[in-house]
Image (cartoon, rainbow, N blue to C red; front, side):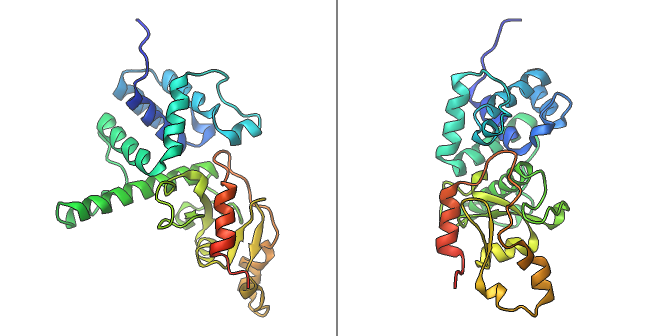
Length: 253
């Protein structure tokens, strides 16, 4: 059978899966890889190898000498750069392409029928789909564990935006703009009662530490002061995003 080059659309959905599948589960028996392979007329081996090719471009993996495939195509670099130049747009495009190829609707469309057709419904659906991707990508990067506490119950975990959703449109779905946090630490992070410094250490607001009599605050928050977070397997938080949170969101007084 003659060699068939990967199309841009196929590469986009392959990168989508690279983001959402934990690195240790990128293999030919993964149901998502099998599903995509069948829908585009390729083998699971070809799809899993393509995902490994994307891994070679991930700075977090290169730093840990887990570089995936050693060689790849220039087209993979172009798709990697296209996503990183506008995560918001490419996320939605990749989710729609994945839906068209596999017939499986992305998360986020449930309940959209209650809104009338038009711009409002389109905006809501787009936001929900992108939020679903962001959650999947961030949780996969952190092995579905809170990076502060190690909690691994998915229902109690959130994908927390470092730079808020409303502030940076292009990076709303960028996994490097996310932390996997337990529900309580997510809330503290959003409120500025807790931050993560650019060197990946937990810092607590004086407003939390002031109430030394609060046993729960000591147990759930204060004991993690200056602790290092568990780094993700990929998509390490961008230092500029963390600096923004430290300076603009964190309650330092």
